[in-house]
Length: 83
Image: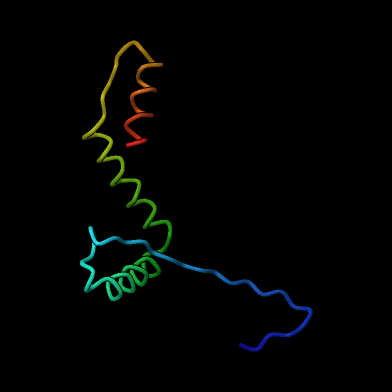
């Protein structure tokens, strides 16, 4: 990389995080590289939208609704989030 004194440069660092629950250990290196390439190909907006959609589905399956007690509803959701 050719850099010159007095100029500003900007770098971006991308990372993906997986565990052996998503990718078997013997395929971890190749799997994470593929995941990173997929992220770069799809773009942040699409990846974030997919992430939000998956979390919404999880919350719909796990949600506990307490009608008429907003404070209790907020408390139960906070505790569920902490799990």
